[in-house]
Amino acid sequence: MQLITTFSAKGLVLGQLWGGGKAAYPAIIELEWATRADLIVEARRKLDDGSLDSGMGFECLYGALLKIAATTSVTIDDKLFFNKEFDIIYIGSLSKEDKEFLETIWEASILD
Image 1: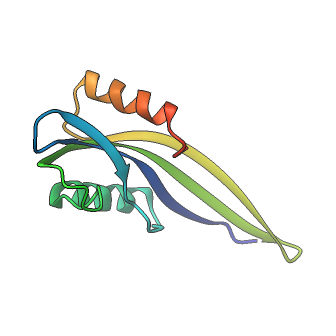
Image 2: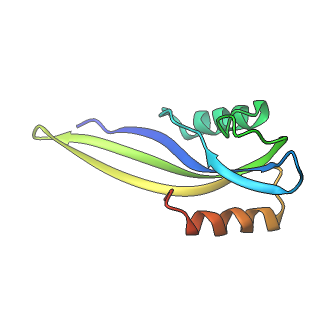
């Protein structure tokens, strides 16, 4: 019996609008990663280069709320079984108010 775990994430990125003010937009983390650490490194790279929002057009990105899914699969008697565990992390430079803003939007969204 071999357990295989992959990591994926979705979430919200917080950025500065060109006309002023802050806004949130879905974060783009579409790939599966073999480790949680690799996923976080990629998310931070995308935040730093401005691509975490998939080109929304923010003047700059502050940070993101990411819901990371750890999906473990195992095959038993030729049947495939999955287990998912989730945790939420923040990356970037976010104040307490920024985190609360992202949490409020996340809870009200259909992204979950």
